[in-house]
Length: 230
Image (cartoon, rainbow, N blue to C red; front, top):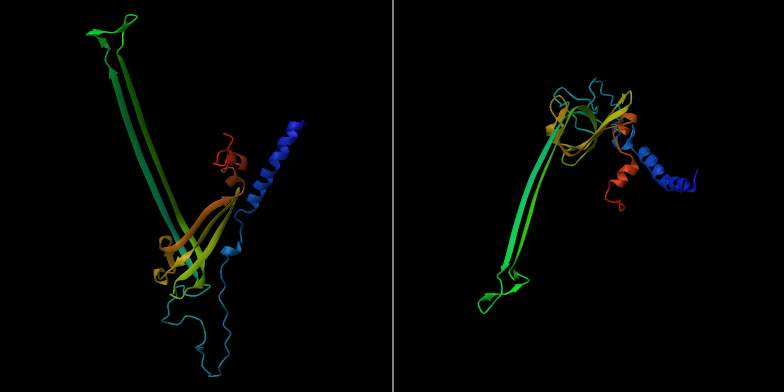
């Protein structure tokens, strides 16, 4: 190995280790930030009343609502996200200037230099035309169950959850966090993702299949604004 090759290898080593570190910091299953919240267990002292009905039990009664309303309850989120954006712009500029000077005359006769008169003219034309067109659309549909992790003072529910699918060439995951109004939860304990406030919805993948869809760290560096060499 030549001295130049050794210098290049040493120069690229920090980038290689940085890329490995970024892979290790990628999404991982069983992330505590998306772990479900377990309901708090209520320990009550049995009252010897002789009745089979326990008024201190947390079970739902005959007329109570079965929709999620406390920490640890599950809600099924129906993912129905569709976004579309388009932008068109066009610009046309034009400018024209012209200046003319007549020939000099002395005693009513034009002055010539080597047979040429002294008239002069200047003209300038500039044109610019530009156009741009951009469009983007995305859609996400499916279902995921999330857990109620906190009940706010106004009754709103803070929810979070994730779903991992193990495939042949890697894993795919869906993560959802946000705030849900208890009134928006339907009778079958479902809520639309469009009714989640401060929603954070992530859909992605890990593994070899996902890695092939991303550019390397060095390639991203040379195509970024931090590249001062080209």
